[in-house]
Image 1 (spheres, rainbow, N blue to C red):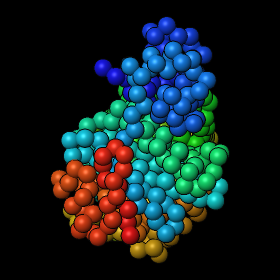
Image 2: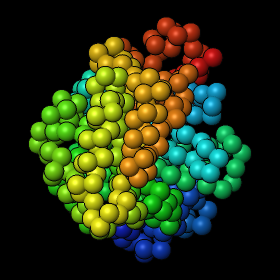
Image 3: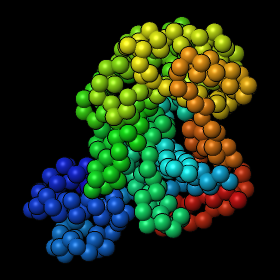
Image 4: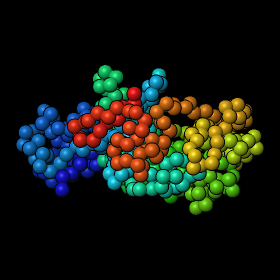
Length: 383
């Protein structure tokens, strides 16, 4: 069976090369060619011995994901839809800002958590992604962006695992993918600039803190167990007290001195003044010595019909934020990006799922242009 080298972190790639009779420094060279230079053709890897290149052709490949569609927003946001087989698609989004370039990547096809406000959760769960499929999103995006933006230096400075899926339910594949992102011979990202978002799988949070502590974001969305049970069903297994204690334990290892709490603003559900005041009480209950140990990211809800929910009015969001800020809690309101390309997680994949395997039908419905690519899959570009 041909090995996909995107599945390997440096240590496992070294073991692979060792089985081919090669020393570790060859694995380092190969790793750099793949991740730093974006090479997928072994013949292009000019400083590898020709004998090694010939060996690799028979046993290995650098297999990217098949691209279904690419959508570029007026604000510079880019969204890609990738085919992962069996009619499943995953989403990856690049968000450019003045001081950073952030890539939001997926860890699963679908999601099993079932949060009420998440369109991905309403699609159901299909499967975990492999570490290679997770890394392939970064591999493709980084090297596409360098050509697209005509830049030689690294474009992506931040990676957030906030796309489709619950990363900690795919822990065994997420960890090697994180190691590739952090490796100086690959993308060299800082632990502070790689964020894993979780709905609160407490045992895996503890394990992550020990094995690969990166920045942590927790999908909170409610200040009480009763409300969070309704919005985030996982809360019934890991209620707020367990979750908050796990957050404090994580801070002992984390590269940042705070946890980010994500809070989706839902009109009339969790956005009232009393909810903000309950959040203040919750945060203070678990703070030690009055320190600032968390920050809140208030997220505008992206409505979809099956949810039965509505987005909070901007003035309500600002009033909610003011209560938290006045209590000394760092609070930001996430800017909406890529609205014209359905860049919110799950929106475009929801269109594709159960309607088309490669996007032709939805493309015709929306009057997009389909152009062939070398993989044999069509690329859909929004007009």
